[in-house]
Amino acid sequence: MRFTADPADTGQRIDQWLHAHLPDFSRSRIQEWIKSARVRVNGAAVKTSYTLRAADAVEVEPADPPPLNATAEDIPLRILYEDADVVAIDKPAGMVVHAGAGVHSGTLVNALLHRFATLSGVGGPLRPGIVHRLDRFTSGVLLVAKNDAAHQKLAAQFSGREIEKVYLALVHGTVKPETGRIERPIARDPVHRARMTARLAEGRAAWSEYRVLRRFPDFTLLEVRIGTGRTHQIRVHLASIRHPVVGDTLYGAPAQPLLGRYFLHAHRIRFHLPSGREMLIESPLPPDLEAWLGTL
Image (tube, rainbow, N blue to C red; front, side, top):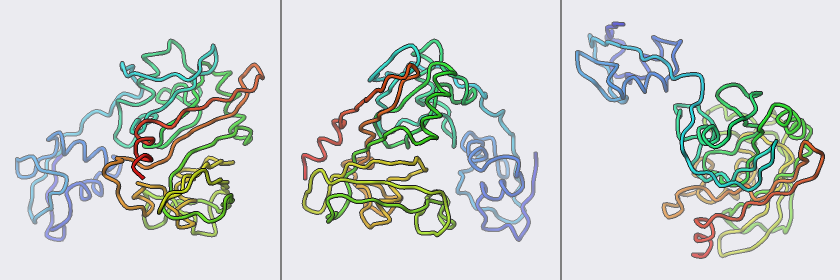
């Protein structure tokens, strides 16, 4: 495909300009083409930040999309519990649960496919076994279904709010009450689309309850129980009461280079196995978070 930049296009970033001309392709996909030299301006490869000039000749060689089936990768996993129906994984911070937004390998799904012979297919070929998710930099316990029947029973418990989910979060400031409840709807931030917000009257209902576990100068360690599972829920709710999670720069916390992540850990989950037996699974605070607490 060939395009020529008009004088009115001068100053536009190449990735944004191409996205406007090729609306059937995502901007992240176009950026991948640019990085792999499949986009050339006046015969030369450019960076995604390249700004156009009038009469620039732009050539695009689209790449085939990645396969719509996840592939197995030999990635170590820590198993907290396993039976014929369910697996509880201790997910490390930094691991994406499934492919998306330009991430196609190194995910939990890739690791699961290598480790287990069968996984539920309810979530589709890109999300085998995945019943619920944790954010990329949230560590802790995550449930996986080995078959469709188990998936459906677990999903019913999640949608019915029958599963108890408890997290550990270190936040900025002194949280004065020993316990509290935040009940504010959560919606996509209309200005910063990568963020969610609890500042609008509209949105999906959400509640989070917290209990102070330990106090430090300038920080408070909380146990947080959520009754709903909205995107970024704990991070949004705690930021909404002016106590953002430590390291969570997306929601207003200062950067913590020595931590390298935000301080949020899925500590405990209580649910019923497909057999009906109640199960409580805990993931201890990982060493990096323990070490960071030790510096306070």
